[in-house]
Length: 257
Image 1 (cartoon, rainbow, N blue to C red):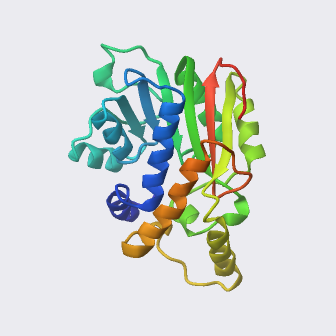
Image 2: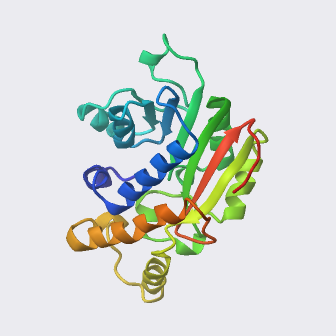
Image 3: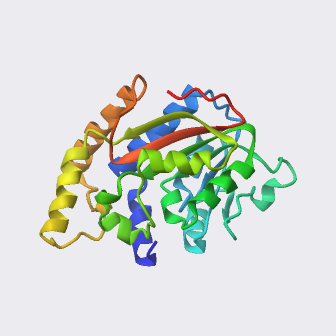
């Protein structure tokens, strides 16, 4: 991610409609799958670690890692603990944990991360290796290559995914089972798709980032619309959307929902 983008990214992570609803979805999944607060949680590609800090404040045993020293440094300056710079793509507990924890994790979060990694098969194998037996992973990625836009460019994405493409990557690991899969951010799909298509057709001047929509009425409106999906996700799976959500289990029972 561009260094110039970190400032705006850090400022919006707390209040932006997208991040707020994504957190709501994650906390619903923690409750759905009865993840105890004693479970060892690792946020892979945690950025500044805002979610790690949020989980810690709720009493969860959470840590995180990111390849950017600037991001980790910023998170540390905000008082967030257990953040480490990821080296060579390795997922491991922070040094200060090594004397009191096993090397595996019970839950790994990879939220809008896999699309940043050129070798996505390798990233999934890394997640699998770092999980304890019976451990889970929650993965979110952006959907549809034809939706490629300014956010993908500024964030240095390699790709966007279809459900079939993503599930092929997961099944290639051989030891992870998909126990839940759905598209989401469906209610805002049409307006976002129209904006992106028209921007390409008419070569419209692009914004610095999709996160520019982060204030006042529009932020509240988008939060209200997007957050409605959290209630529907409890009872159904969406056949299309701006993003894809998978829940995986290592050596778990395959019961796709």
